[in-house]
Amino acid sequence: MASKVRLYVDHPLGEGQLVPLSREQAHYLFGVMRLVEGTVLSLINGRDGEWDAEVAQAGKRGGALGCLAQTKPLQMPPDLWLLFAPIRKERMSFLVEKATELGAARLMPVQTAYTNNGDRVRFEKLQAQVVEATEQCGGTYVPAMDAPEKLRQVLRDWPTDRPLYFCDEAALGSVAGFADVPTSNSAAILIGPEGGFSPEEREMLQALPFTHTISLGPRILRAETAAVAALTLWQQQRGDWRG
Amino acid sequence: MASKVRLYVDHPLGEGQLVPLSREQAHYLFGVMRLVEGTVLSLINGRDGEWDAEVAQAGKRGGALGCLAQTKPLQMPPDLWLLFAPIRKERMSFLVEKATELGAARLMPVQTAYTNNGDRVRFEKLQAQVVEATEQCGGTYVPAMDAPEKLRQVLRDWPTDRPLYFCDEAALGSVAGFADVPTSNSAAILIGPEGGFSPEEREMLQALPFTHTISLGPRILRAETAAVAALTLWQQQRGDWRG
Image 1: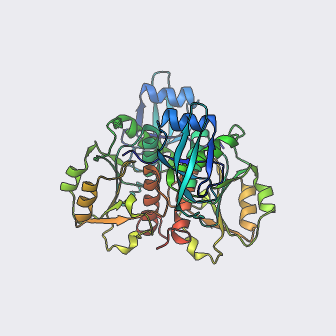
Image 2: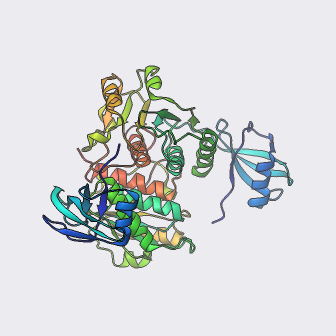
């Protein structure tokens, strides 16, 4: 059950490349995971695919890894964005982790009318979670994490050839399949906050030419559940889960 | 944004029915939620649908609610079971909450070869989470939560006319749709532990006549993510999310 350590580094990866380690990385690899010189691990950097590397030098405060050979090319996820209103801490961590596993390419926190002001986006924390989820899920691409922006502003700047699917809590019922909408292979999914969208937001969203309402069954889903369900359905109908 | 309190009670619901409250329920309704005599709330008991009830008597250590009128009939979810190997605490809580929201009818913890012994199922806690998730998601049916059993035993006693979909981590790739398998409207989904199934378990599962392997895309999903994704796809293809 011991599996190879998989680590993200912000450094180019290539044959013969030496990758220096920060103090934190050295602590993790040698203190926590107990790797020794010569141990082989996997490296990703979000750009150069996945590489086998071996511990070239192990120290308490640093060290270095030597790249051996590429084990996977860079595999881009489909061009799917996830827009989400910040929710409470653990649920947002969960949402970000799951969106990474499910292959969202870009994560965009958006402030909506009913977004709780207490739900501040701790940006660095979320970015670290995206990286950790990428290490864990075997992906070679790290989803982009945007800084939070107002929903109204995001919609004003929207690339109109990209369909935006918005999950309307008020539209409980049958699911509009993503496959029903003629679309490019680009798409975006918008998940509202726990309190749903305001009447004004709903009206604005419905009036825009690039939005499509989808519904996720007869029960009320929490925001993070809706995100996972919508990403799953899109991947299966339009994305990289298709047979 | 203040929404009506929704409470599960283990008591018959019907017109004119008086529902006595336990000390904990009284504390929650009157101490935490600040309801007063005359306030209307929603009651469910998993059997009689959803009822409006009003606070008839509010005390520090107890009280009573009076049923007014039914607001929803009992809506059974589709006949879908979820078998899952116990995983770490927060992730298991999450899995159970999501399975309830997504309309699993029965939750069955199963011990597998790679189930961590430290991952003991805290049965009462999980049952409480199922009830809480039902209150939250607007459902009227509370999924049954079984006591943990060995996977081998569960499979030995299996009703062979119920297809069992098992998510095989080793079968990364395209998704076999649930709709491809000729099936009754009963089904079950089996999610393995973080370490996957053992080679013997995988062999045993593949040899059984009622099992079908499904795969959930090109990335490795955590157990609870796989559960949510598989439940979503089943509900959309075979269950109560169909248009």
